[in-house]
Length: 141
Image 1 (cartoon, rainbow, N blue to C red):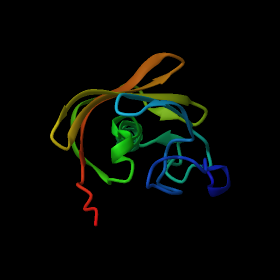
Image 2: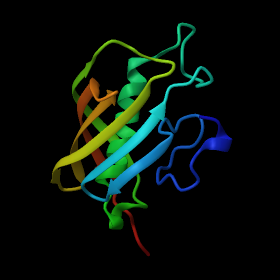
Image 3: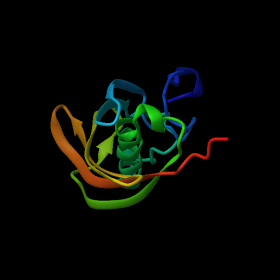
């Protein structure tokens, strides 16, 4: 995604080139989020063979998890990816793949949230993980 095509209202602290989601399809704050990414030859992280590195799949899921997990009162609180568990990835994602990223909150404990996330191309599961996000406490003066 180029800076010009970046959604202006993407509720994440990331900016080009580190925002990996092209658009948000739906958000139910504190519960779920669905976003989309079209893998393009011009993406800065696509390798010479047109493959998106697997660690970027984790980052895509983490960005969707941040959208899903943040309740209205946490929108300004920075979230940190604290743990990745059960990550699995099917054959590589390549240029031309339209990726649907889904994230669903499973459990909250204190200022941390467990989120299940998945990536699908043409409704076929291509990657999944369970992520733990930690929201920093905001000090209000």
